[in-house]
Image (tube, rainbow, N blue to C red; front, side):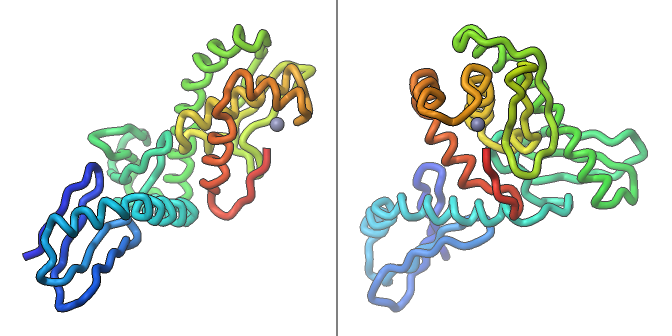
Length: 238
Ligand SMILES: [Zn+2]
């Protein structure tokens, strides 16, 4: 009977075998962890071994999740979808009612009419992500306006192929990529602040970086997080 070690949010299956050394594996697609250990090794020894490898385990799991993020979605039952940086399983319900999307018990419930194909499902989901982002933006912009002493006349949310955000310094408007609703919230905040700082300084010069450093010391971390989560196979620059 397999034993399971619970180490915080990671559960590890322990399999005893006639082997001399311990083997640790992280399996796709979910990052499931299994350790094969010699029959005589105590559970405590195995536990300390796994704990010493937690950093490596998390690294492998992150890598697997990133690979998964890059595969195009088909909007099928139990497919993974990301909302604010967290992974949710899709639950597709076909019914004769206007299409809708809602979060329910850790899943994203997509309701479409019977026979609705991939394109329709994708459009319904895209509209929902857009709405999520549109409602997250006003409080963020309002909070940062006084801190940066800038005013944003208007913001736009749209699908963009190559950028997370952009701004028009003369019109005092900013534009955000719908895909940001799939990223951790701190990433959205970074892109908003980045574009708002452009209202003070249009280029990425030393002054621009100095302002960012002052108002958001962790901005490089957010930029790197965004960089590590490519959307499909597109290259992002901003
Ligand atoms: Zn920029």
